[in-house]
Amino acid sequence: MKIKGSADEILNNLAEITDQPYEKAKEWKKLSGSKVIGLFPMHFPEELIHAARILPVLLQESDEPVTAGHAYYYPFFCGLSRSVIDQAAKGYLDFLDGFMAGDYCIQVVGAGEVLGVLLRKANSMFFRLPVGNQSWTLADITQGLKEIKRDIETFSGEEISDEAIRESIRIYNMNRGLIRKLYEIKSLNPWILNSREIVTIIKSSMVIPKDEHNTILTSLLQVLPNRKVSQKEGVRVFVSGSLCGAPKYDILSMIEQSGAIVVGDDLFHGYRYVSTDINEEMEPLEAIAAHYLEKNKDVPCPTRCDPTTDWPQYLIDSMRKHEAEKLVILMAKYCEPHMFFYPDIKEALEKAGIPHLLIEMEHEVVSLEALRTRIEAFIEMK
Ligand code: SF4
Image (cartoon, rainbow, N blue to C red; front, side, top):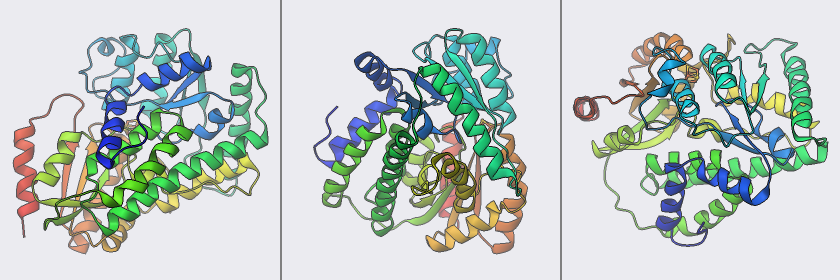
């Protein structure tokens, strides 16, 4: 792919990658002769798989309506899990040599089981992730990582050294750091990247080799400050939610076309993915385990049963930090962890006098025109 060029050219190239998110992985597999493992978002140890010289690819929700997948999964489960099953049922995931699911959310547990049926040739791995945070949790996650490391070693036929994990952690930390630099530039000049471009940058990072993505981002950071953008007044908006699946681009564009500037987010295809680095000095598996716990402090995650997870307060604090006036919550329909937290978020926002708009995102087509009216009315509201 073209790595050098203007900011527009680089961003267009990244958008092409995300339009066909698995094509680069297939190409990489052909050229390298190595394996590809598909991971359900949001918590699996990409670094550990990378250290085994396997390409980890985060499974993405596709734009295609669910058809073949109806035979295998419930219509009242979230769009991401249904879409992944549908893609597998249609043969789109046959290039995967393995996949990893886990138990942080009931819909991922079930989707992992169904993938095992649909992708018979792929190696199925299950990563047990404690969702609480007790005195024994760190040791428990580290033990789980040791078990999954053994599984990956058996699968790849090679031992994974501590040095290899450290090197992968370094590459992944670099990627997170480069994306955070883009956020810093955007915080000084919010027009320089729109929210669709931010999501595209992060989504592309999830599906191509990280070292290649680091090279692309390094080029982008050099040319981005020269990008010519028209600056206009806008209502400062923070966007929250959209767990696991990327938010629909149409919705993000509508928010901005309605006169808003997105000044911050906690999306998984957003700041949540890059908020927290892994400690490079610690014993590497323990460092990955600690990262899982740490990132919940930086950007609280509703998949945790941790009483200290205060997502509502995090949102209020983040909005103050970004001087955001309004909050748009994107909730994937049937996403239980998000639905569970929403009443508390609503109550806290109302108490703090912060206006918010809840948009339930359905995998299938929503009436975009009706949604446009709601978004416009919300942004215009004084
Ligand atoms: S956390 Fe929500 S979006 Fe993610 S798999 Fe579970 S239900 Fe789906």
